[in-house]
Image 1 (tube, rainbow, N blue to C red):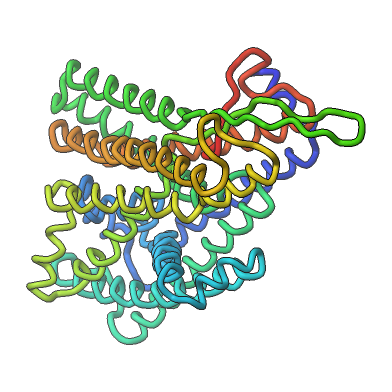
Image 2: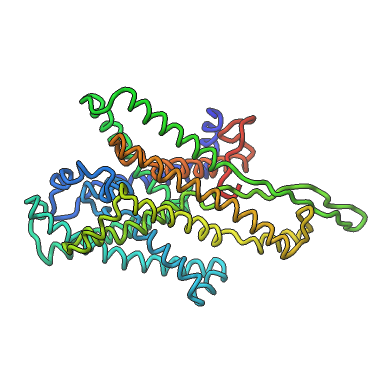
Length: 437
C-alpha cells in the first residue's frame, strides 16, 4: 500500500487532480467560518450545544458545522440535492425532461441547468425561513440578531443563497477536474472535520463520569463493527456468467471466451440516505423556522430520535435505492449490448429474456442493498439514544464517510492501474471496486 501511495506522485495528471480536490475542499472549510452579517455566532453555539441527535444537529452535520457558525454556508449542499431529487422525479413524469435525458450529454447539461435554477429557488425559500427563525430567537437569546428587520432578512437570504451556489460550483469543479464525486466529497469533508469535536465530547463525558469504561468499549465496538459491515457490503457483488459465441472472421476464429457481469449489492451507494435525509430536512427546516403552533407540532415528527421519523426514513431509503438504481442501470440496454457483441447468459435466451433475468437478479440485489443501508442508517442511531453520544457516530454519517472514501480510493486506483502501476491495495491485494464493480 505504501508503494501504491508513492506511485501517485509519479503521475502528473493524478497529482494535479488530487491537489485540485484538496485545494477546493480547503476553500470550502475556510468558508464555513465566514459568518452571516448582523448575527452573533456565540449565541448560536449555546443553542447548538444541546442539539446533538436533534434536527438541528443533523442539519449542522450535513452542513459541516456551518449552521453552528451561522456561516454563509449554513444551508450546505442540501438545496442542490433536494433540487436534484425533484428534477429526477420529474424526469420520469414530464415527457420533455424524459426526452432530454435520452439526448446524451447535451440533454444532461440542460437538466443540470434546470437543477441549478431549482437550487437557487430552494435556497431563497430556506434562506428566508432561516432569517425569520434567527429573528425569533432574539426573545429567548437576546443579541442573536443585532438589527432585526427587512434589511437583515434580505442580507441573510442573499448570503446563504450565494453560499449554497458557491458550494454547488465547488462540487461540480471537483467532479469535473478533480478526484471523486464533488458533492459527496463536500459532505464527507464536513462530517470528517467535525469528528475531532465529537471525540472531544466523548472524552469529556468519560472524564465527568457520565460514561463508564464498559459503555465506551461498547460504543467503540459498535462503530468498528458498522465500518466493517459497510466495507463488506460496499465491495460485495453478484457475478452473472456471460459466454461469448465463436465467430469466424476471414480464416481466423474469434470469441468463445467466458466472462461475467458484476452487479453490486448496493448499486445506489450512499445516494439513498443522502436523498432521504435531504427530503426529510426540507419540510422540517421550514416548520422549525416558523412560530406557527401546528407547524411546530408537525416538525416534532422529524426529530431523528422519533420512531415516525425513522419509519419514514427507512421507507425513503428503500424507495431511493430502487429509484436511483433504475435511473442509472437499464437491464434492457445491457442485454442489447451483450447481444450485439455475441454474448449470452448460459441457459437464458438473448434479448428480452436476458433483460428480464438481469432485472430479476438486480431487483433481489437491490432489496438486499436497501435493507442493508436502512439497517446501517437507523440501528446505530439507537446508540445515541442509549449512550447519548454525538450524532457524528450515527450510521448515516459512517455510511457516507466509508462509502465516499471507498469510491474515491477506487478512482485513484483506477488511474494507477491504467498507467501500469500497482494499485493502492498492492500487487497481491484485492482490487477496490466502485459501484459498477
